[in-house]
Length: 624
Ligand code: COA
Ligand code: AMP
Image 1 (cartoon, protein in one colour):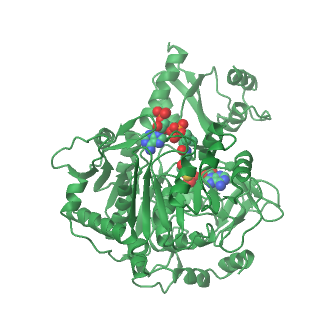
Image 2 (cartoon, protein in one colour):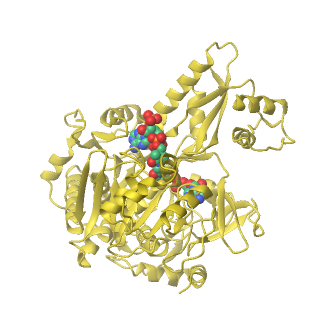
Image 3 (cartoon, protein in one colour):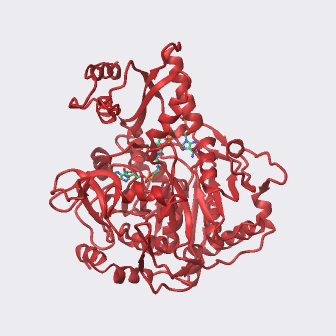
């Protein structure tokens, strides 16, 4: 089958198309109905199917004769550890942990927050929850206590699973003080914490509240996978929206398993037994989909890497992992290779390693800038494949469909819509833009399996954020264009979401933190271009009349506040005091113009501006 026929079939005959894909995974009860609309304006995939995602990821591989194949390799340069699990061993570890969860009274439908570093127990925790039908919500370890508290109050978990510490390049980060601070701040109080003690730091445990992971597992009986409906939630993953409150993206079990299994072939051309490495973190959607679930659904070996592209110990780290484990397919964010290239512009490190096993390199999470694409292409001589997707979709909206037909690549383009995604570039009324002209990128409903079902506890926000802006379409929040050959180019967000080192963050959320400083009258945070991280936030702040504070001191305080409330990953390091903010006559801050000024781009003075002189003043401040 060629790409275009496959794509057409997925759009013209979605029921037949997805029924065939559903047949590729193990169900307890295969679905009879493939698609059913619901009254939130969207719909459900495989509503009468019954399965268990941990069964599909683990037990099904044992049934297929892969029990002795390696399922997961843990490689941790920060602790100098390598460990691997066969499918049988991983199934056993997950079943035992699931038993431990049951012993703590956790059952189907309960929410469980996982706040853990990149250790195998994080994946075991996710799969253990899935095994008993509990809904996991992984919170990235780099988020501060306040962010964790917000998620605790929204998801209302029965338990928190954590570890005593995470290990960063320069420091060991103790997690228990953060967890305790978050619980103290939250209104909802989880019943217990289960803590994995690591030798690098021991957590202080509160009797009756905190339980030792290894002790619970030692006394637990393995639990079988429980049958869940295809439409029962598998997980909630919070992502940044335009306001301070993150959105809890809800993923189902059945659609997710079918779509991710399909994507492994379509997007990555991964086959059972392939060594697949997504260098990301389980706290992000890339980690959910392509460190934990999809490689296991597809019978591959997945790599869980606790380290960075540079400084653990050097810029050869990625090539070393490829060599040591015979990685076939590597997926990471462009920022990781920008960091490698910065330290090793001539790719000298590459010659120290044998990377012959590597067939393709995949990039996503942010725009793949042409210089990074060219550098990778020149030095590795491998196909470098960009693909575009979001936490909301869980798998690629656009990709080079190498599993069906390898298309020529175009630098700057994520190639073609994946089968199932009827991607269109539209203006706000939903009318299609001509080829080559920029507009909003939208997907004609219905979305394919695997995409978000709703926002946890907030159907209204789901409709308002994604379905109402362009009736009949899913609104992606990204802008871009399709060229005459049908290639899709993603040019960036059209809202207040920014992307810092592949981490999705909300400038609105940062503004809320900055505005809470007693000396601040008004503020605005925009994402400015950064050569390494893609974007970094910059604040423009207006001091209250009568407030006397040294500007450098104020900047230090604001930087500390954002670090404390959101986390170090926000990389908020610059706050400039301004006399006024550029606004329209109706009082709207002109963020786009500020961003253009910050990036040193040409900008047109908007006709609606209240006071044009302010733009030159701000421009001078950015240049100074
Ligand atoms: N737990 C606690 N803190 C964390 C953390 C975690 N899991 N991850 C990052 N941080 C902290 C870092 O220690 C750093 O703190 P500092 O300001 O005190 O030094 C801060 O957050 C910023 O970290 P980071 O964004 O990682 O910047 P960096 O300069 O240390 O490293 C890169 C730059 C490019 C090497 C790094 O961002 C990277 O590996 N990016 C790949 C991104 C990625 O995989 N994204 C996932 C989407 S696919
Ligand atoms: P996240 O939900 O964290 O995965 O972030 C999703 C956002 O990252 C998208 O809406 C895009 O703005 C951006 N993004 C992801 N992949 C790409 C890509 N390949 N090209 C351009 N932008 C991307």
